[in-house]
Image (tube, rainbow, N blue to C red):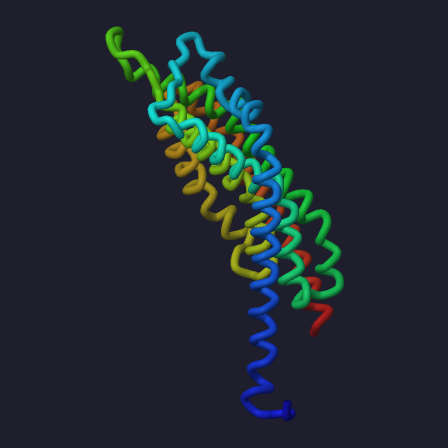
Length: 252
């Protein structure tokens, strides 16, 4: 092959960049598939774990499945969710390896703390949903019935609902990590977050009011941790901004 210059030499780094991205995505997908398959034998235990919030209620709903393959679908959904959660460190590692060539040596030192902190935030959010959010939301939703209309729920719908709350809560608790990266690249500043704190508080209480029963204690139970999360995000953003300013000064 001849050694070409000009447009080919300019395109090669870009093509290599795309190839690296494709490779990282494939590794992440392979990890998810492997952990999903490995989780399938344990879906019975996980199913019992996910139905505990309903079983612990004073008036639990009766959980049924309506199709012959209904339980198979449920177990596959549980295995997939478990595979994604377990492979989260691997996915984060692949993301880090993709962006790390463009980072400064000092920034690369954030590798292990970032992965640990990101994983911890997601797991803590999932724990919050399982132990606090779901036990509050389920009785409220079931209370919409009447004496003659009792809750009898398709297990597919129940598991889908519970898993969505767990994963959504885990993603919401990634707010400090998101604040760190946005502040690190200069998109977000702690001053901006402090300036619009009152709007953030309003949004938090609106969110808490939507997903909880209409009583003040339940709303505070959900809103208070989210407000703490917002304040933590401001502190994290301030730390990231200081690091960014030092990096810019070292470059200049």
